[in-house]
Length: 470
Image (cartoon, rainbow, N blue to C red; front, side, top):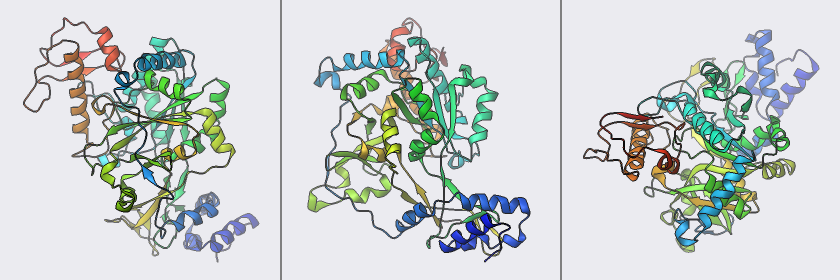
């Protein structure tokens, strides 16, 4: 057992040893005093009780306690099924925005490693002509809504330890894209140790443990621990409009969605789209004993139960990670000490081996533990799932090539903008694959959604070259 330099260090080392993590100190004698301080701080931050519970998942088989059925979904064509509901919801949502009772939240803790870069994903350029970044697109959508409804509301951006300072620097370099710095709030999500198959924590360096962000489920604790939840309550904010940074098409502060959420009296609401096919890598909505849940694509086998009369092919409503969450609901979860459950992901984890060599594995070698915000649905007294139109609201950026790649994200934007022009009666020449011959881009400062575009666009314009509307 290594010697600590003071009683507190000895206590921390002893606790690690008792929890089977004594190997974390195997390079102790090689470390400088500042390096020992860093290692002690890392080990001190570990919640060993929670780690033990997480490690149990490595050998446990996830089985649902209850019976899956198809979820209740409000369709995209709600106006046809319930006349007047669409307009009533729109008015209610617009009033929520006007009164400053809503905040915007973006989960942006990831890097662009799968895209071959080492920058926060929100810094990735995505638009067809101006090459605006995801962060700029979202900022301009927020500015439009603020100006239209003459309201001010905060934009909360959740980063991680890996990209926090990079994200802040990017906003400062771009003058917050026209927003006031005091209305853009940055918070950091929780980190959690990664382990091998025996539950041993990896060392990232001889003096640092390997931790990964706990996933978007960290939203709940981050809102509370940062003090942002209290700030929202004092500002009279009732609802948080949540989305993830990779979806350029998200309808930020969609008034109809906000209104439906309020009309239902929901504590948490979600949007969904129809999956392209059963194998698309999307979590899907289901109902488990009457409660809406999301089953991740990596756990889709839970839905295969012929004895109960269903298979995964019956569940085709994909989760696009656009939620509305009541601040009072977040407070209730925190006050009751509710922790969202961990999910296990088998990943490639760079680490130090026993000889002090840095290992960059070519194949998955360890486990990360993540929490998902949609698991909060199980605790909501009332919730809502709204089906929307994929081509207008969902195009995630995830991969360097193929599905969900920069090429596909650009393609989806071009197809969406072309559809807007044509619906306005403006001809758009198309190629054989359906893409417009000329590039099109509509600034969110002009119109972030189709309905606002149709209100404002000059229907006499003609597309005779690459066309940018601002």
